[in-house]
Image 1: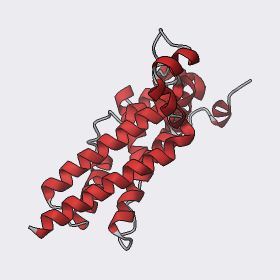
Image 2: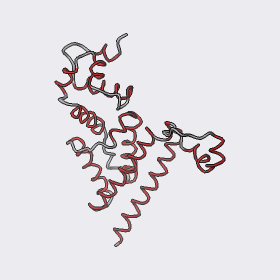
Image 3: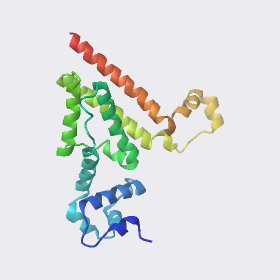
Image 4: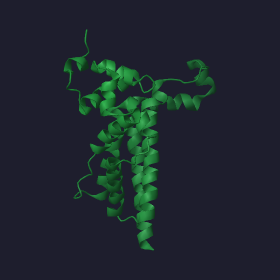
Length: 219
């Protein structure tokens, strides 16, 4: 039976939007390691060369996918309190990982320097400046926030909740006997706890940002 993607396909009407939609579907179904232009073409019911007409290389396709995700992010309403604006911006970025879990592992290490991504970066740095942070502190806090978001997205989409990576594992009995702290903490590592853990860390970050800003402005 043809896939839903094939049924949407009309000969001679392949578009960038159709290709990007199908690429996200294939990546989420196959994983990044299993993605290829050949599989994408099969999903679209076309030859790979038809895709290259729109995207000259896989790098061009990835740039378009990243631009699509980042370009959809909106700067929070300037009329809201600064802390709420920053919280919203961070939550919105993290949501990409929920919507595109397989692709999130690529996004967090992608060096975003296209015009679309630079516009988002410029807006986020402007958000720091709106909060009363100088250029240096804005830049450093942007990087620190990035570390937190990237780590959270990687862990939530490829971390402990996915099960063990090690070949040598231990039984529940040995875990309780020899590693009681890990055993007790384990219940808080699951996906159901992600939001509460993320919000805890986010509050800590926001508290420290405001402390640094207020201290700098007091001098």
